[in-house]
Length: 357
Image 1 (tube, rainbow, N blue to C red):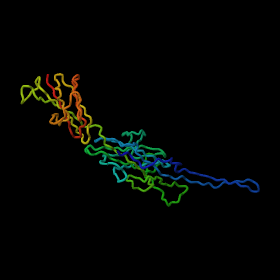
Image 2 (image 1 turned 135 degrees about the vertical axis):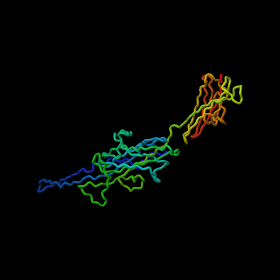
Image 3 (image 1 turned 180 degrees about the horizontal axis):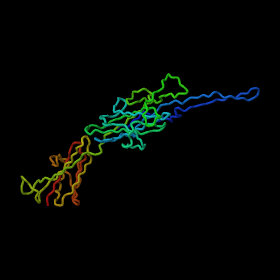
Image 4 (image 1 turned 120 degrees about the vertical axis):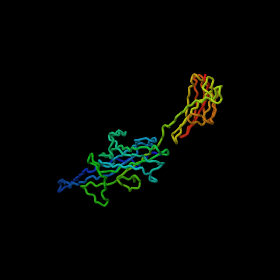
């Protein structure tokens, strides 16, 4: 099983806010002819520059479980602003699986896939509330949950796992309600100006959606896996009754008193690739019938409620050992049959006989 991954580490606090003016004056003391004197230096002033950093992680540490045909499947990420200033964050996603970057099986893509920001900070996707597609004015050393929402295909029985990546890019902040543009670092060869805010990319997770971006790029990413874990199958049980003999006609027996009737229960699993395990059938006989001892057979081929061939005779007292099981309880007039497995797209039947009182 592939777990969610993040290419980032926990970081220390971002520190003094960018744009903070730091001023300092030194003092000098001395004596002249025995008299104490002092003088102040000129004031040195500089502005704290912007140290750009961030982390992006998958909020959930295990894959997101989904079913075929599920709409609005949600997985969560957390974006943390480790920059020493309030910033916007641009968000993008990818379903690409670059070799050596994302691991595990990826054999389908989600449709209608979108990004939304957790606007009320409750960690739960609320479609009516969580409509923003970028993070607005995230204070330093604070985090915001981001949702990726998409639909799982229903027409791909082989779809088992999909990976999605979220990339966050640090952007200009300071204008609430307006999406800032991506930050651009101050050129490395630019001499530091004491009265200007230089922009320095300090992230070092060597990431980006494809994993090939240069170090210190003002971007962070993580990925999460959607695993198709079918929680139910399309299981149906069809029951039929066939008159085998009536003591009168061998060619066309009727349901007369004393006639022998065979009940057939066919279990059909219409969900491909997913088995139903430990199927237990329970059938209480009508009071107008009497169970034929030793007539229970489990594991035969059945279709449309008709038992055809094969099967294993099962003892009425449940003492039979083997693949199939079952019993008949005369007190409760109940027939049971146990089928260990009904494979996806297959069927297994059980049958027993009664006489009409």
